[in-house]
Figure 1 (tube, rainbow, N blue to C red):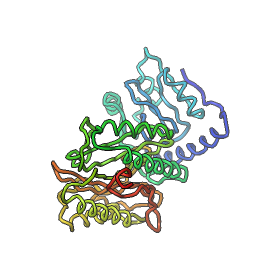
Figure 2 (figure 1 turned 60 degrees about the horizontal axis):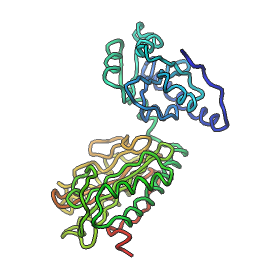
Figure 3 (figure 1 turned 30 degrees about the vertical axis):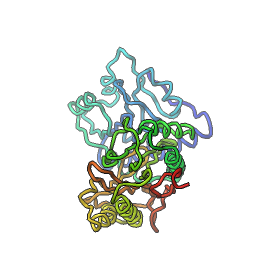
Figure 4 (figure 1 turned 60 degrees about the vertical axis):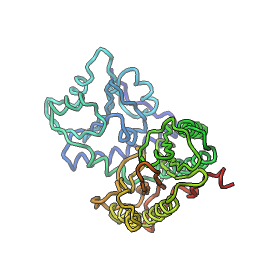
Length: 379
């Protein structure tokens, strides 16, 4: 069964339809350049960027299919069809039933017997991916979609600014809330509740205390905070699909020896990275600027990750600010600047803001104070 293209139901939908039509036109230009017949996109940030819908990735196949010429359609299971139709009233839906093989339905629509060249977006499940690769020529869609999503438009930046303001508020409130005797998980719950109170979606957090602060991607645990702990809070949520990502480091009462020196080194490195973020600068230059400060202070071996990454519909997306990435930053890109020093078994320090790249320098989206003592202690 196919659902036809729906009538536009409101002025908001009319505006959205025009926006996504423009994006589809740019994708078709990419298909033309790569001499590909179709772009196939499973549920992902790419799917949302092209449709505005946040489709779920499950064992039931959902695929947006964009042809080089003609109108797109979306293969979707019946139980997901009504929700997608409401979000994308302009999009034709190819609805499959539980008793059907959705890949067979897709193969007929794409005429895979003619061996068209396909560009595949990230996020396909292995079985579907292998089935397509076995039938026809397939290439990654990154060269098309990655470049299109790099530069954020005014609406995307407005959403990122709102997400940044909310993250500033939540991290300050979390710092004021936490105290010795609480568990990391209790603080994480508080963060989630506050984001939900603000109306933000998909909240997440890293709460890393004491020796856990030396683990950059620590999984929040049941550890109880203690006097003198260094605590790293790394958190975010989404506004209209666009994410926030902020990190601040705090300590409870008197910190371990050397913590002040490490903190000031990371703060200087973070400011150097922000200052280096401008239009035309190679992405690796931001990493080099921040890393140089840390290396000069003698902590180079303890800065174990890249300096930053792009943030948009996905919390990690291009550009990646790392040595070897010679691609230039461009105005409108949004990325993190988050150097850190991690002393194994002792503590760690990370400070992170999101910035919008501009011709005259970075526009910082986060403004929560960089003060290692929680607000409760400062007062």
